[in-house]
Image (cartoon, rainbow, N blue to C red; front, side, top):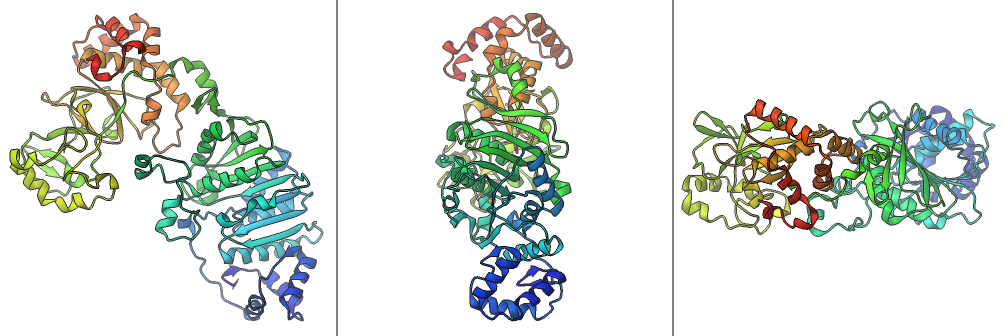
Length: 589
């Protein structure tokens, strides 16, 4: 049954009717609730108390509970909450006197803490969703009814927006051990904005991204991350710990920022959970734990939550490098540096139904299934992440229209030089105008991004940004026209086939693979990014690479793909890679 939209058991309903039966004033009722259950400020006003008395006098039928998963509201089940508090007590020796839960939901963590920690003196819960504050209070009453001998710390359940709450006012002046416990929302600020949620921090670019990064998505942040940082800001100099269930990406971001923020946190541990089992969602998540008021540490040990005795690996900062596997990185750190060539991302147009084509005999067919007639001047082969499976590729599955040779180029030439292409594009102009990204604002008609002189060099070495294969492909031209890649791919481009093949061999070497495994995160949306790939120092790899191995690899590629490459230019390639002699990629070729 429900009271004030909150679930309540018959047992708790009966007890509340009995306890409050002869009390008319809400202040007296609050005192009674403190005496019986140690819950302070149970009722906020006299009006609320009277409405409550009326509600519990009538038995309500069970109503369907609102689905708040879209708000990132994944309530921690009782078993998981109890497992977390028991792990904190047994593995981390936590013994808090004060527990603060900034998003307490239905109170399962509070109940777990009451049944686990015997030294508790105070619990403070904050929750924006009013029905959950009632349900938390009801659950506490249920707990004490079933466990009457359990100690009763002072309990406060506050109906408050977490972003407006003054947590620094809770700083413990007596040096009692604090535990910041909970499961903040697993959702981004842009998602909550689209749902018109009030549970958002004040608008700010708290990561300080530049304009273009903010426009293209880096300004979008995880609400759980924001709340975790709020807690670190408020309590990292206090005595105690933090234990939060958050997405893996949040933990990674906090470790990354730790190098700059230098929070006084140590013993930073991550306990991976099975989110499908615990919450019914396919999200990589874990329990984040750390000690407060310690010499700052910059790496995190990773455990299995269900078998937490031995760390699987450690990630974080090694001197000034951020890595996903500390031990593996130390074995391969000499590959880390700055790539001598600039990695590029592929074509971005946000209009695949119009801009991407398939060839049906001598006819092009667009993504809407329409046969179209256009000149071939602006049509180039196109490869996507899913196409980059072979070592060497020269046959694209799709084609694309390339309207510009550089970003912002005037596209009016199409109308005069390529009338069929212009007619096709103009016919679909409404779709171009409807593209949502602001990067297209005030740009020429039919604009694209991810285009430049580098796009038109004949040879490319590419990798998928989405797949976790650590595999690079050589892209050859098709009918003397370079093949393009979409924006899920990253590539280097070359005029020289020899240099492209040498680069391919270095990138597909065991050393590079192990290095990339040491610095990439398997749960990232993109395993490979430009920032990651620019850390591959080709010069360092080249000077260690054995010439005999080079010749073996070249012989194999020639035999399979008829490339006709030789090793004679290897020395020139190595000399060209020397940092003092490289300023721009184009100067090499």
